[in-house]
Image 1 (tube, rainbow, N blue to C red):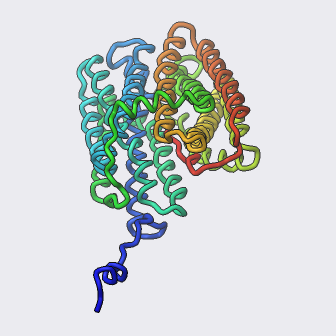
Image 2 (cartoon, rainbow, N blue to C red; image 1 turned 90 degrees about the horizontal axis):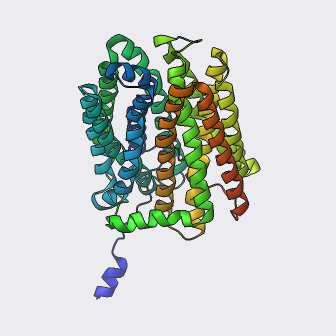
Image 3 (tube, helix red, strand yellow; image 1 turned 120 degrees about the vertical axis):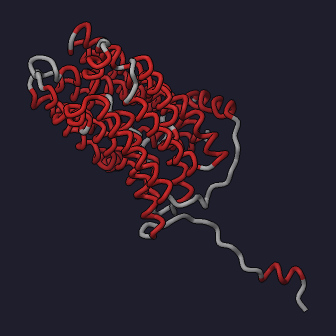
Length: 425
């Protein structure tokens, strides 16, 4: 005679969800969907950068004012990232990512039709809020839905998508704008984003590892603000702020420099951005270097390379500018990939919230983009490239000093976590 205890003992157990493994059909669908999403997300964010001179002419604003088209987006992304985490914890990662891309694509199309500068800035500000949804939920989705051995590979694929998006966002708008002006460039990038959103709806596997755990927004914000109280996390936030500022500031101003003497490139300036894809390999190279000499030394070496890039960009010859753009992209993406993982690992080792530490880092990172991007174009307008170069080198000096201090204070700067693969550029 069997008892209830016997029946419970012999009842079949449902195996715990371990995640999709590389090679499985669902894994391949997941990777394709997230790569497409990353490409669309970052191309829509940054495609205005090479078009700043055209925007200034199209809307009748100054060079310094034109930079607000990018700065307002990176500023509101900070707010969006703060809200995305709690929202994704409530409604699920997949829903947030799908609606992020679909809403961003619609806003992008409206930007293409914006009749005035103030309306364009309003729409680009709203765009930052919606764009934050994909990066804010994608990393958590990957942790929950991909098995441990395949996770680094899936992360790398998503990063490749974002890097290609950054490249496409700087390469494609110029030729498109030469054909049909600002509306065609903005409309095309937006349609690509909508197509990526449809791909996410069709391809992305539903969450199986997600468990709703609502977190109050106030609690999340408080944890994010407290994260830099750890000295190492705080210093890494400074490095991210300064490195991102030097990178975006240089890219903003070089768009105007290539239109001015002695270059006078016109629409051909887009070809110079072919140097950007050099940076796609940077996270892999940076990780290998960190494994040999330590993460702290590798990150500060990347910052030093960033400073060399600013000097190269200052030479009034086109080969030097092209080399400088390739080098600054490589240096920044490699450094950022190490910093973003270092922040998470440091928080984990000290018993702090990893999500809050990551949010603090990304917040200061995008703040650097917002402030330095706007300041660099103002310096170009008022004093030419010299002011931009001084700003870039000053920010590199700040980043280098903070990186050295963080390396000295961290108890285990050689530790390499899989978070090092996370690059949101």
